[in-house]
Image (cartoon, rainbow, N blue to C red):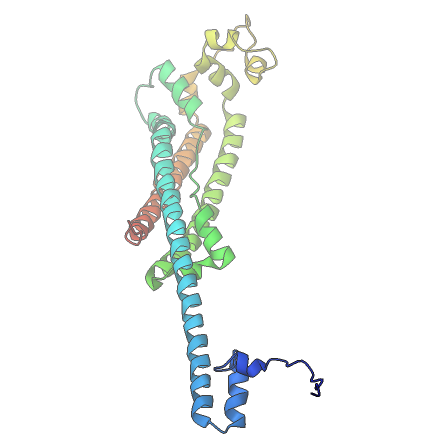
Length: 281
């Protein structure tokens, strides 16, 4: 009996793995070789549909992320606007007596009898001081500077935010002009009126005695040294002093800082109400 030496049988890979080729390229190649144009077209349709669905899923995810980011911006913007309203109200209360003081001194110029000395000292001490309001613009500026303003979906809200930012910047520039006028008027006031002794008398001996000698108040009136006499009647009759009080009152009142403060608050309130309407609960 003769034995034949046959090579070991190697398994047929194609037979071991029946069915369609695994990759899209293999299936397309097979379809082309076999001229099975229906299979080729079907594979291409599957590829296109898959790509479209992938793009849609990605766009949906990005849209959801932008929507969440938009809501974060709107909530922070609402807080900034509410803080601007609060600042305007608070500084308005502080400015009320500081605005009345120069008005009363200006009016006293025409009175037949001068006001009491302590009133003149108090008004003259308060007249130079002022506080200004600056809107909180951090979030609005970040939206515009980063280009994230584009994620605000509502066109009218997006326009309102950019308009508010421009108007607020104009308000800040206008406020700087009012402050410059007050600084100039206060400089003339120090030259015209004895403001050092007036402020020292308004603070009172007890307050002066409690201050450190390096403090500015001590240069005005050191402890134990009598304050120079101040003729308040002559002060309110002084035409230059009267003119300065009119100017200071005008800059602080509805023609100046008070108007600016009211406009800043009004603009902040209007935008906050619009923003709050777009905040999702």
